[in-house]
Image 1 (tube, helix red, strand yellow):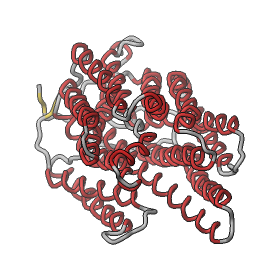
Image 2 (tube, one colour; image 1 turned 180 degrees about the vertical axis):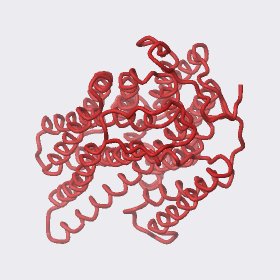
Image 3 (cartoon, helix red, strand yellow; image 1 turned 120 degrees about the horizontal axis):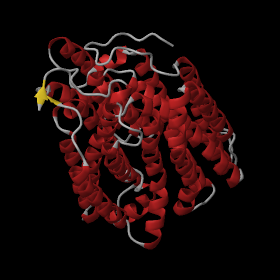
Image 4 (cartoon, one colour; image 1 turned 180 degrees about the horizontal axis):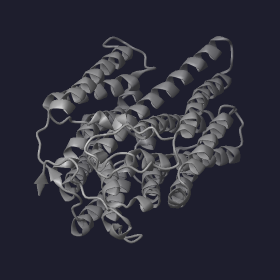
Length: 495
């Protein structure tokens, strides 16, 4: 059924209309699917050396396996806000999993490196649909009293999957070839798809409308160019368009995209409805999430580099050392959610932001002989603090929006997250390289220069963590009560 009423998405109203606790089966299969596709984001980390040898490509070329993934996510996610309002839940699920499965098969059979990169692009397109679909469905079907608990369960999938990726790849590569990284994932994806189609029910109502192709082009060029430019910062430029030009050009096109969306809001329907940003709680939580995610990605990049390049650990040893933090973060997700439902966000976000600051402060003093036990403990504290921070941020940000903006809010959140990931990669690599080079020029040993670069890069993350603390203090404990399904956004000013 279709409708043009932007407020028609049904949501539970009143205590009697709320489903019983634990009765959100539609989310079970979406979470399982999200876990499967997100797991695949990080499984390639440890396979880079083998791929370089087998396909005879340089390290820079091999990084396209990650760069292409981020580029695709940045290009596709802005379109999902429009897509999820036009197709049913089952249709979106089929599109996401079929696309991801196709990409996985291509990767497993790839005869050449360009084909492998192409398969990763197809995988990323499926992932880009699945994650916003999960978030939009959650906000539509889950009663406000249960959102923290359910979001905590979702956090378990979203946080554990990328943390287990490197450990899983280390185990697989220890006994088999890199193609098995995809062969192992394929039956998981197929099983989730088949069972999901048997059990999944449509949620909400679809809406009629045309897509603005000019917005699609602007989104692709803008966000794609920005992420590509950021991913190239720190590389030696041997001709061609420099990284800074890509960044500046991307920002300019994103600005044009924003202006077009504002124009379409008044006379048609935008591809990505930026009225979400008129809600102060959403805008503040979105900013905090982006900065925290940037710091998290920075730490996730720096620690493996330190452990492998300086301390000489194998990829498997590195994966096993950093995996406990992600596992604990995921397991605490439901606990954090229940605390949020009972006490609100501030008792979680403020201590969580301080924990992130303390953990990064300790890592900024890392040395050549820092005990592995200390690194493990600090990393666990860091990930637990992020769990206390991000679950309430997700819930508060989307919960502050009216139902007809849920899909656009989750899409914008995903887009900003991809840009933050690219910024985190660019900042950490650039600061690490710059500081190490300066110390080497001043006569420091290679090890001392590398440690100095690590400390400087973690120091930048500390500055970002201070911003996270400030934003956490500014956010309220709960979303102020507002009329359900308001037809137009009303500025929220409560703190």
